[in-house]
Image (cartoon, rainbow, N blue to C red; front, side):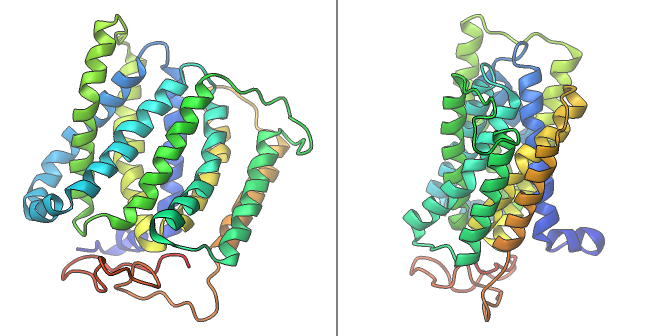
Length: 334
């Protein structure tokens, strides 16, 4: 059921939803870097998803019972979403943050929109439109301006670290997750989050045990507890809900454009949390990124948004109309 009032307007507005999602994830990188010495990566990921699952379960239990047959019928998709979007992505991010900086990790997320377009084409033959490609190029120019610290023709002092490899694999994993959201079962959003979070925590439990057996234990401090609470509530529950809904409204490729905002949001959060300065190139890059998102959002003349369509060319295995009682789908990028 669609919420009413201000919540209802937000639920149907992809731009604020996707901005909220990206803002929460940007904070996840800063927090992950802050506690990299006190909480091992797999343990942090396990505690994150276990806590998020426990928080969601009382709200999602009844919906899970209602949706269980659909979830079981689509178990392969649900399992894939749990692996690539929950268990793998965040564990790889926290592993990479052991040896690279938060800003480097945030900047590497800017490759994700391009990978989403690639996966969407490879898996579903979803071809990007001219405006989408143009917006991607403009946004990447803004990201490159930030990466090179205002010297687009030079290196700008950017240094890659060993952890950057783990971050890149994480980016590939989440790009695949975003593309696969096209196939997610038509169930209540809380049901999907609850089951994927629970499966993700279950997959990570052996890794957390192995870390503890190897002597990598959590140093329990107020900061560590606060960090786990933050990553469980904001980048997990809030951001995933907002992002999944945003993908439902505009499609994975267009939603992926908003991930270009991560370096900008990350720079602002780093200013407050880590004392890092915001420079003119951050502002200029942010302007280019915003312009790219605006260009990518432009639809071709006559390209209407219609309920009941996931893409302009439905594939045989997809329903042409949404199941009764489900939220309407908007047309995916073409």
